[in-house]
Image 1: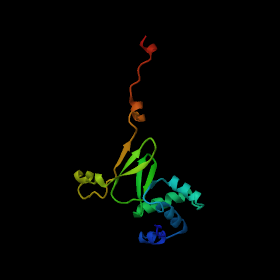
Image 2: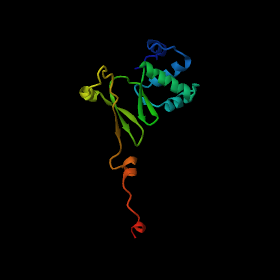
Image 3: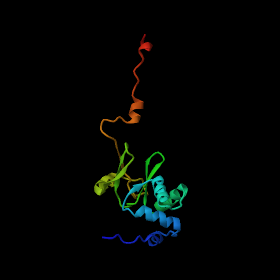
Length: 157
């Protein structure tokens, strides 16, 4: 069955955004493959492969604008790395440390926020849970740095 044509202009206008050529092109790339997680670098590479002129700064600006209005979600995963998620429903994520891949956990962890009591005058708007995973038996770099070092034999003499 054929996929319906992408209605980028309607989508952007629904979120109060002006449908510029670059926003439309990036939105088509972003939403044309279903729900997914990607970085600005990855989307910029896709734009370049599609012969769509957009600087990395423009891609960052468009993704951050889309996140600001709620069209996508922004996930701070590691340090300065931000992953953008086209699925804006309440769900949590696995982050695979060895590959850098982010995947959905699903709605099963929705009850996680039930026990959270916010400060007076506030309410929980959303819980962004990222579960970090690593292959079994692989020591975390932080753990390796924190282990005590055995003294050298010369120092004992």
